[in-house]
Amino acid sequence: MNWSMTIWDFVTLAIFIYSSVQLLCYISIAIISVGAIKEYANKNSFIDYNLLAVSPYAPSISILAPAYNEGLNIIENVRSLLSIYYNNIELIIINDGSKDDSLQQLITAYELEKINYFVSYKIPTKEVRGVYQSKNPVHKKLVVVDKVNGGKADALNVGINIATNDYIVCIDVDCVLEQDALLKLMKPFLESTGDKVIATGGVVRIANSCEIENGKLVKVNLPDQYLPRIQALEYIRAFLLGRMAWSKLNGLLLISGAFGAFDKEIAIKAGGYNHKTVGEDMELVVRMRRYMEEKKLPYKVAFIPDPLCWTEAPNNYKILGRQRNRWTRGTIETLWLHKKMFFNPRFGILGILSYPYWFFFEMCAPGVEFIGIVAFFIMAILKLIYWQTFFAFLIFIISFGYLYSTFAVYMEVRTYNQYKKPAEIKKLFLTALTEPFVFHPFVVWSGVRGYVDKIRNKSSWGEMTRTGLNKKTS
Image (tube, rainbow, N blue to C red):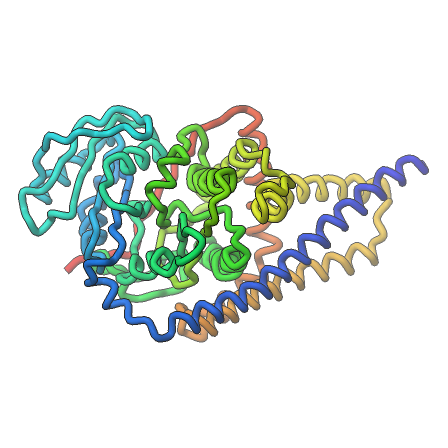
């Protein structure tokens, strides 16, 4: 019995130390993010983005938008992207071997014709079957590429090969951008005078229940359904606090695949997107950073706290589970591919701080929590639980989580205040109360299933069916 007590005491102590360090990290992230957001707001209070939009000296951008079986919304989505407020731009739609009529709809709607185009395969990809441009000068910025199906990463690599401009912006074709999104996203590249900015990310928000008209967001509403609403809260925490703090430390490892900008030259030198991982967005950022570190080149990965991109969140547990399963597998694959950096001082902040944080508190978190739950039930059966201590810690952890979410909502209200109705803010607070008992356990379980699927060598994305946003056309 004494030996059993030693084992369970060790498990309890290990989980306690793990949780304590994690809480300290969250507190540090919150503190750093406040300073970073204030600094960003002060620097941008006198900027006139209209001047940048029409300037011939603005950075040249190629928007890459992969599309697979998007026939239901492809015309409206492309119309939205064509309406983006920016001068020096080209829009490249990559039809990744769609089985529906996506390509034919684009050909008809935008008067496309196939052109002779030499594709330089700087990054190896599946075969390009054709490149199309519009006969109508109104759509001169539009390029449509038809290729053999190879997945999102392969489609983006084709876009990089086709792109003629200095910077690439990768976006999900069904996302809705703020009209000044590109202007703000490119600002860090313009401001760079010392360290080279190799990538920039922006805040992604949940578009469920919002009103969208002709490809433009006309009214922001808090999602009506529970799952999208709690993801809205989760995204506020992750983007406004987490990624802003890591950007300040120059330790950001992830730019959302839904919307991010990259230096094309560095992306090509780093090898482009890796089509062998389901987390290609994170893996590219890590590989570009690793390339710069190994070449001993000063660089920065920036982040913009402005809400720039709106996307549809999963509204049922089946699709949400697939998404979180894939995120877990993508994180495991990325960290494994770049394990050389783990606690390696040669890679600076990346090796000493960023990688270990992602390893212990992003990749390992579902497993640690799952082990903790299993250990709890075993110890309860063996009557090894000190219930008074247990409930004290349980209340503390739940209270901390709620306070952290409350602080994130407070920062949202004090900064960008997208949800202006008091009733919506109250809903966010009430939703936060349910997170430890409903949403979080499901996310942990989905992460554990991600471990299992990774062990089984599962490499598919899983079908991510969307129900469609609240769109109107005039």
